[in-house]
Length: 146
Image 1 (cartoon, one colour):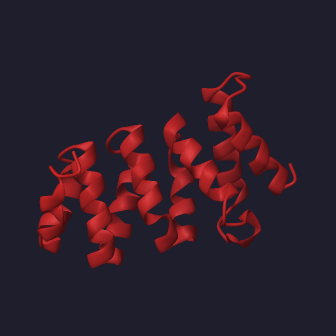
Image 2 (cartoon, helix red, strand yellow):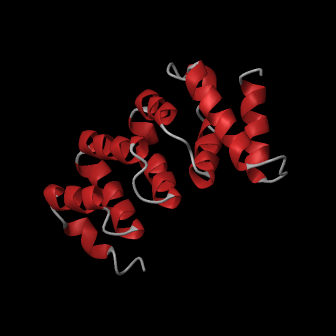
Image 3 (cartoon, helix red, strand yellow):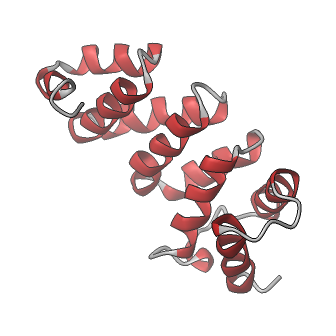
């Protein structure tokens, strides 16, 4: 599959934008956004935020988008979370990112609304399941002292 997407590395910025904007497919859109992040980080951030805020594509694409754009502007990306319900795959990636390397106390926009969104979406998705998502949420709530 990786060979099938190799062509994306040779595309112009406007072609990458077209693939991401139109979500030609999970793999294509993810790879195009990854390449766009290298070529034009601000545009990658803009398109990624649009995907996250407007619940475009599936949960796997959104988790991939989160992974690609989070480090570009953590505060803005986190702020986009409070605007929509999070699916299980995206929620898991969000919690993993917040629990690793990036300490929640250093993120300015980790507002009560974002924290509530994470916890409420978790509660909606998993009714007392003991899985990886539960472990990530426990670690997250311990860090923010809830």
